[in-house]
Length: 417
Image 1 (cartoon, rainbow, N blue to C red):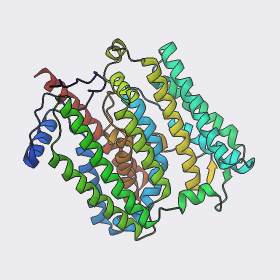
Image 2 (tube, rainbow, N blue to C red):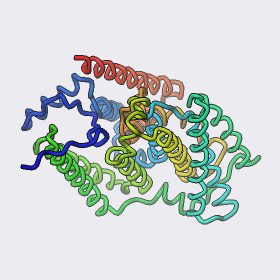
Image 3 (cartoon, helix red, strand yellow):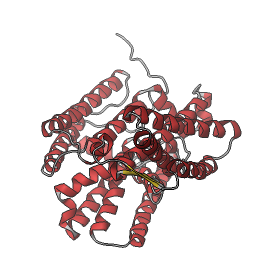
Image 4 (spheres, rainbow, N blue to C red):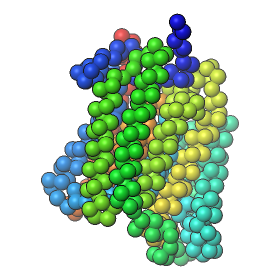
């Protein structure tokens, strides 16, 4: 009889406490979920409950909020800010922060205006330059952080000011570069949608992919003599996901369709989730966020991890700025300023990424930006002032941080038990 193989420490890395004994069946799945919550492993539960409450509240106060037209607009509005928040998730996972993502987005927007409009570069070449600019800035942050041990808060604060100056230089004295509404980037952001049939097929493929990955993971863990999920605990959420996605596509398709820009954002989230959960690099990111010294002693290249997350964060910020310019139809000195910085950070935290490092997922950006944009959109429909919107959004962010802190405390207490 072949002895079960044991995975390496990085392969066995998981957010689920292995001391929990998984029970079989639907009732067992519910008991397992309750046990994880009591141990502090609350996952995405608070954010999902929050989204339901926000949508229900705004839907009651103003039925226009839940109209298919408004929800379709929410998808478009979420794309640029969500891409920026995705980069923030990465740096938070290693316990650091980037305060310059708004200014980096502004630089990305300015490069689009100067290259694509003023100099007539092809859009593909402009995108390459935008991403290269983000990569250079992110690499610079990482090198300063590693070699001089300067806190990331200070590095990126200095970067914020420098990038803001660069944005002013690029845009010039006019302060704005209009992008033709007939251009491909504006059309992509404002008009292009998935064909209805393609959206339904894509929704089914996502649900099938989730079921397949969950089943393969359960079998792999069972072969390694580790606790694994039951068939019921995989089938029930898979069917619920399928029904939810198909209904969402049908509802949004009534008013036009699912925005291509949002599809790109969702695809980036899925790719980053795969890289974080299924690759050596991703497990190393979580390990460094959990304990830098322990990760170093385990043979992880900590330097490479820090460089990669700072680089990716700045690249996502510059790409998000380009999306923002396409949505606004202009590259201006206002791009990336205002709430962009704080909203991206708030989205990552509200979505479930821990400020303490080591916990969170790429889907934190998707869930968090859904809350941020829903609140902003709902408050606009209620004609509330900017001051009231700031206070309400700040309150939601504070609640998210408190929940994260309580969860962290519960996990430490559970670990000592």
